[in-house]
Length: 264
Image 1: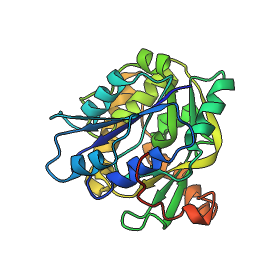
Image 2: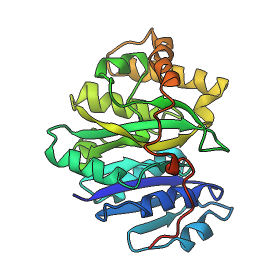
Image 3: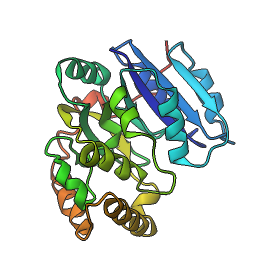
């Protein structure tokens, strides 16, 4: 089963090697890794080129932001499953893609999703909280809570049916996409047991201004799809247990500090 991993990048030279290296180290060989770069002005492309291998493809050109780049990745994807791995995130175990592929081969669901951990921006060995896939239910989307996107792999046919990310949203287009996936089209997800992805803390949506914008956009998305929105603050209650489950975040201590690995 072929997997497509889409990584959107812009001036990600500080972290892109770790992201690429964690994919290149996977023991599942049937994959393609698409780097969709928004014409970076730092050394992102040089660092990606240094790790070049046959399954890595880099596309660099100006875009209209994060979700425009994600749409480019969707269009270019040829895998049976499509997942997104941010340019400052990484797979925290070498069998992450194997676990996803094996589960998808026997699962009747339209997606497979592994657990994600949020780690320190400057110290990825420091686990801040866990973002589990298990326990998610589609009704939680009405509260603005969705499964962890960096651990989410959708079947290509289902992803194409849901369609592209809506560029009208600046921070909530991924939530809008999940609303369409689960609540509009009625697709379902099969959660994996292990943690497979580490996601660095930070970003626009985690600032006060970003959270307020995300709340407005989330309300708009829910309302336009006919589901209403008035309890979006409850998403934080759903996230709270993740702060208590940090100790078992990584599968082994040796993988707490992921090395920058040369691709083969």
